[in-house]
Amino acid sequence: MRIRIIDTIDHIPSAQWNTLHDDRNPFVRHEFLATLEHSQCVGGKTGWLPRFVIAEQNGRLAGAIPMYLKYHSMGEFVFDWAWANAYSRAGLNYYPKLVVATPYTPVTGPRLLLANIPQRANIADAMIEYALAYARTSDVSSMHWLFPDAEDAQRLTQHGFMLRTDCQFHWRNNGYDCFDDFLAQLSSHKRKKLKRERRYIKEQGIHCRVLTGTGISETHLDIFHDFYQSTFYKKGHSAPLTVGFFRTLGERLPNNIILIMAYHNDKCVAGAFFMRGTDTLYGRYWGCNEEFHSLHFELCYYCAIDYCIAHGLKYFEAGAQGEHKLVRGFYPTQTRSLHWIAHPVFRQAIQDYLIHEYQDIEYYMKETEKHLPYKTGS
Figure 1: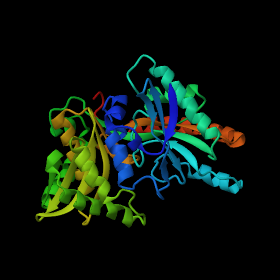
Figure 2: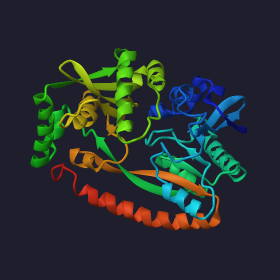
Figure 3: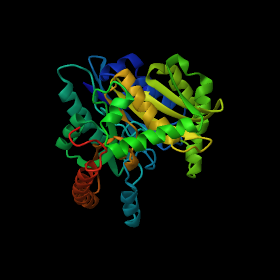
Figure 4: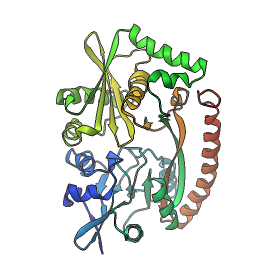
């Protein structure tokens, strides 16, 4: 078996890469990762430099790890700014570091991509050790695996990585036939609140359109990108994803993209961008050029829940954070990251911190569960 580092996914044919996962999660597909490179969202001066680990056996791709050399902590959604500040105060460099992740995407999924062969466990262990050896001999402070699934997380802890947990809010389809079935499971007070928010949309003369596949034109994506940029500009930031990213993704993964657009007086005023996996809808980006009461909730949550019910999707992950999702039926859900720290003193300090943080997250999740809007026994 041969293991090596490559600096672009273009060195691997798409068909070979896509045999390494079960296609449930679109964010580890070759098309998605390549689109990030080709649209200059990673590489160059972005601070995300591809350093993919690949394993080959008998001339065929047997495994891969989507790893990046990072010069900042933006676009990760696992926040280590305090760690970087502590390094700086100690006169040490926290950057560069290595990150195993899908850039700009806080979605749990496989990070050890493996061919379905009997040796897959051995290949996974060998790739992890290779990545660690690369880190130890490189000028990096640390290695971070962001949002791995439970299987990968367990394997990484066996290699000495430190576990960190956090909480997102995910919706579950409990066999609903329509949105009213979902509402019927909520307490009376919460049900009235959701109905009222949806009613506001109609009263303001807004209607929403769900666009999929070839129904999404380049013009739709251009309009949406303007909305997406405005969300960042309002917060004083620049948007990391280019219009070329959305256009190219629309060409390469049309069946994985859902665009929900809101119209007022026949003018498009807002949009929300989603990606679809085998059984899960992933809410990713949204923006608007006019403010309307409850429009964000309608576009980003309620229309998406309607879509999940109509198409039999089991889960809806609406992005990172957001306690306001709780009262709209989204369950607190644990997420994970795994960390290796080169400096022994900082490694111990961070390990101690993670133990206390884990307890805090456990307590937080138990407390938030008490505020779910569902009827007792639902």
